[in-house]
Image (tube, rainbow, N blue to C red; front, side):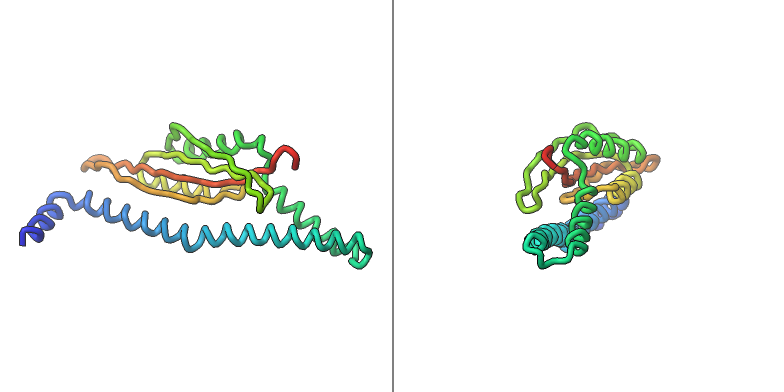
Length: 192
């Protein structure tokens, strides 16, 4: 009975904050489920596709060297692999990518204070992967626009972790929300 009374008091005094916290909780759960069910599968599919194409190219080159493969099929696979690799910029363009992140945050009227990143060589893909972590604070609609801009980026970009934390709201001002985000992107090494 005391618990019911406490819940009733919280609901009557803080409806807006309670709804905000519940909404953020549901969004966080949804983002987690999206990541686990869709984005991880998408990354696995991309890795599988790259490995498959690399393996096909090696087989076709062996057949070409042996003289048992038409040159047009080898050329087609080489062109497809070259086109795929063109989507992945060289490592020296990391600063350009970071500039794009700041541009996205600026157009969303958000401010990124600090970005930390961790490079890692992915032997399976023969590429450098960079995991970038940062946070932005603003109103929910601004954060939504920022995520939209990230998703439309002209590069292979994976949002690998995302979390929201709500702030206080008042009658005159919508509460600010902090978005912690981790993205992963790929670059070719200097020898590519």
